[in-house]
Length: 291
Image (cartoon, rainbow, N blue to C red; front, top):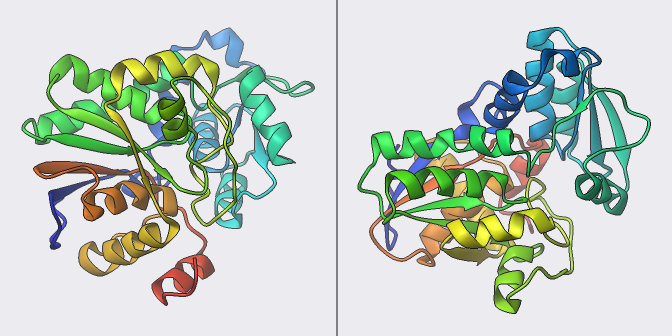
C-alpha cells in the first residue's frame, strides 16, 4: 500500500505485519518444514529466535501436529514469548551470547527434533524470497526495496528473487545504530564484530554476522542503510497515524530509512517485517517517550 506522507521518495509498504502471526516468518518456516524429510520431523522441530521465527516455526508445527521448542535470548519481549506459548511451543531462554552461539553452531545440545535455522537455512531463505516475487508482481517498476537486516535471511532471500526478475531493482539491508554489524562489515570489507545495545528494536541486530551469510549478502545486496532509534520511533508513529499500521521496531526501520532520504528518490518499497510489539512499549513510543 502507498504511504501518504511528504518524503524524498514515493514510499510503498509491504505489510508482512498483517500475516496471521504478525510477521513474515511464516514463509521461511513453512517452506523449510514442507521440504524436510517427514521422518526428520517425527521428533518435532526447534529453532533459535527472539520471537518472530519462533512463532513461524511454532505455528507450522501446530498445523502439522508435532512438538516445537524455541531457544530465545533472555531479553526477548513478553508479547512475542506469550504468542509462542499460545501456539503450544516450549520456550528455553538463554543469555544473549549463548543464544548467538546456537545460531553459529546450528543447534543446541539436549533438544530433540529438526533444527530450523532462522537465517541461513536455504529453504528458509527461499521462503522469504517469495516476498520479492510479490513485490515484483505488484510494483515491477520499483527502484529499490528496503529490508530489515537481522541475520540476512530476509534481505538476501528478497534480493535473490529480485535479482532474477528485475536486476535494476536494488535491495538494501536496513539496520539500527545500536546494532549494525552488516554496515560495519561492509566498511571493513570483511565480517567484523560491533557493540550491541538492546533496545525496543528487538527483532534485528546482533554483535556480528554469521560467516555463511557474508558471501551471499555481498553478492546480492546493494548496500546497507543505518537509522537512529529516534528515527525508528518516529517511523512507528508515522505508520500508526498515516497508515493505521502497527509495526514493531524492526519493521519500522526501512520506513525510517526511506523517510530520511537515505534510500534516495524514486519508488521505494519498505518491507514492514512484523508488528509484534509490547503494548506498553508501543504506548510509550506513541506518546513520544524517550526511546
